[in-house]
Length: 139
Length: 308
Image (tube, rainbow over all chains, first blue to last red):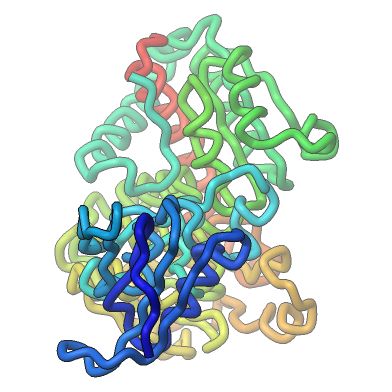
């Protein structure tokens, strides 16, 4: 299957197969009127299968979000049809408004203006904790 | 520089020892401290019911010669009008030199501390942290045992929601040779993150049991806690678990003669009043110790902020 190359925009490549749609939703690409292609289960020599997202416009990519969801993904910036920048992901030390605290006792559950901030507390296990109540992300 | 205390871990082991030394000096020489906070104001913001912690802070400030301004409940404050914790902290900073805050939501004290221009002391944020209770616990352990190491510490009751339990585990895990016996119903066991992040990570030995009497003979310290109704979303669970452990004279038969029995109070029925006269009962001394440690902490934070 072929998808046309983009001239100016962003390609999120090497997405773990199956995570493309999740990233699409978390990046809120569905809420824009941009031309976006999600390509699923593309053959990959390195990964076997992978997903790719192509965005045919400049779009402020939340790298922390991508790094948190799929640290193996790469973000390619395209200008005039050429790759001008390739960004590899690093596990972020803090996540701001990327994930949300689910603890009903947390101050963020009642004070809506607070940013949801999580700090990396265990890099080996990719464990993040809410800076307010210290609940583990995902709990 | 302004500094707040949200968690007991905000204070190093050395700072804890300095606070204990100050508290013991206050006990020995109260007159020396009677006017050190003249004209200084403590704001007590209590958005959740509290008797002893609020009174302890207020008594502490008065005994240092300072003044207290107070919000006694959420209903009588602007929080009832929907004011945020951040705005409250900024506003109260204009009136007071230091703030002691209790709030039902976890992390509220952190929000206050990051927005206030004066030091904030966490006087309890939901089930999260209650560092000044731990300061009271530590001074009590110190005055009873004269050491923080090589102790077998039994923690009994609600170990899941009991914030004082988590803070005490954090504080005592810093010292060598301590061992914990965690006595609770299965539903109220110490949360996994406390076991993983504190006990396992520091290689502190511990056992979990549901049986208080079997554990009793080996304990140097028995820290009893109340099953807190306000931490349950479900009344049925509270009623089922509330009477899990009741300490009676009979259960102390096999206890060490120099056991120290602590409780953060208030108690409901988990320690029989018949134990109050036992020399091993330390929970009312603990209340008094709490006031001295709060005095020491207020002094330390005001000095660091350049207010004194």
